Length: 306
Image 1 (cartoon, rainbow, N blue to C red):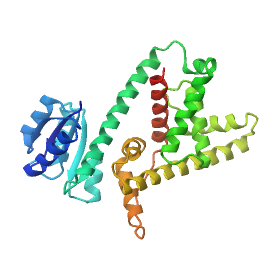
Image 2 (image 1 turned 45 degrees about the horizontal axis):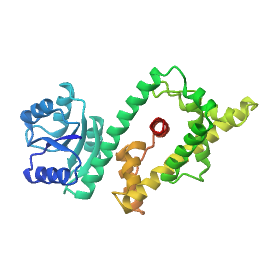
Image 3 (image 1 turned 45 degrees about the vertical axis):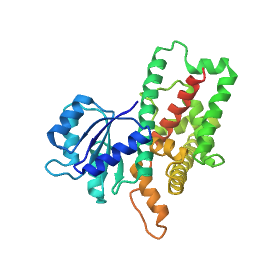
Image 4 (image 1 turned 90 degrees about the vertical axis):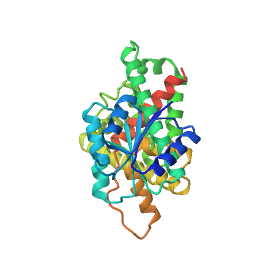
């Protein structure tokens, strides 16, 4: 069960957060404090996996507390709570370790969805650790296993296709490039620690399509693959943001939005879709993270099915 700490000078807000977490069985409240040195001592003593913390508090603000906790060795996850919409302050918060942002006044559905996303991230990190550990101990590589057992190859394709279908990419031109990328990564037994640079991966995809391609054609194909995958990743962000606007608690949105993208960018894309006439700048995508997460998810499901 995930342990939570709450730091907020507003007692009503603290009680609401405690109630939401407990009534929805999201985890266990380990500490709840109005802030200051006592709050930091409580966090270090109870060591919750997730801390929900107010941005603006008298005496010591949320960002300062986060920095002090990190200096003291706390390595948990943070969710920032505030009614402040100042982009510079939000950027500073993310820079200092904030994973997610909840706006006041507290909304039960939003709090629940954000916490579920943080829990999914924790689960992914644990899966990644397990996969790294198991792969480092394997004497036989996934590539050799795949060559010996056709069902596993089919299974990996089906897993990737299911993920792409969940985020609305099946049928997109870049989806085939992503499928091929996963096939190459699994076949070559890459780990997250030695994940290839994107240009190198795109080159492998191009050569996979045509082994006898000349240098100029190879460069053009690499650029085309890069553009197709990037468009697909941006489309996935748009699809998930659209789902989030319609139903913040949709399982696909809860599971994939924060795993594949920085949630700040998901929010920006949601605002962009909601306000069609306004131009929202700053929406970014991290293609490498996107491919790494799909790769980890695929390996995780393959190992689970063994």
